[in-house]
Image (tube, rainbow, N blue to C red; front, top):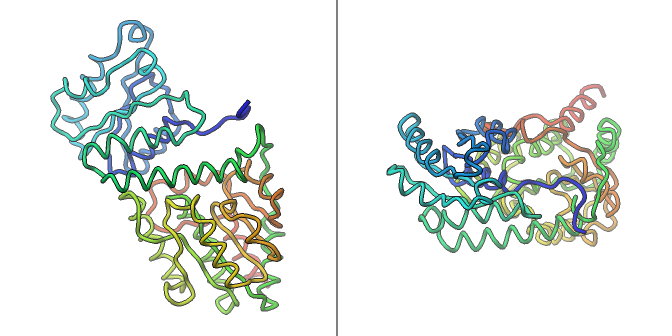
Length: 361
């Protein structure tokens, strides 16, 4: 038995990946309700999502002609730069040839077929299903494709070792009380304890996780802390763009690369970044560490003797973080909807609690 709890969908992973590739129109070839929530959310991020709305008739006779019709409509009405047709369980089970429909449509817009369905235990299959045709189309080079595969395997390994997939079922938890955790953090800073504040976040979620860094800098500018962020300029187009925006936001808050900020890793390297950050932690030797984003990427041996404050967005991440020795764990609920379509750092609940407690003192 692998999991008995819901896991991320490979279809949704495919949608997010085509967005990162610069696709501005995606067609879900399946029922109108497939991946409804994420399809709607992604429209806030500049990805228009259409559907072929397959129903019982097409389940029997196929949806080739409908897909051709939607492709022609999409090109005429929206004039997209790039199109991705993303498969679903229905289209894959009935054996639809998505590429044939693209060819038969006669559209001139660059388009790829993402042959994926939800019958995979790991959502990275959806990412790879989008990246491989993108490489064939010349949207990314082969080296980037291989780099992405390495990163995906590393992220999966971390999730299985210390994340929400570390056992068959993980009970969700909303985390420790933010005001209690923030109070303890400010006590350590006020005592002059040496600390490190780390951003190791996944892609666009960093727009909110970075607020933890800016909140600490704004409220405690003289704190004895060093900042680390995974904002190096590598990855797919949107990933690099987001890193630039967030880095600019940190600079505006007084967290400056080459000064009090050290860049380690890129936004898509969150799962493979643990050892590099861990090595930096051993070098800095802090009394406390604040890890915002994907704290479980850092192995426990790098955190020995350090009071650890972790900020995550997964209610199912609370239990494993506590089990692996993180002293304080706060959860940013509903983070994903708040970080779609943004181009600058957005407030986090924990960041705002830090600000409020400092203002009261």
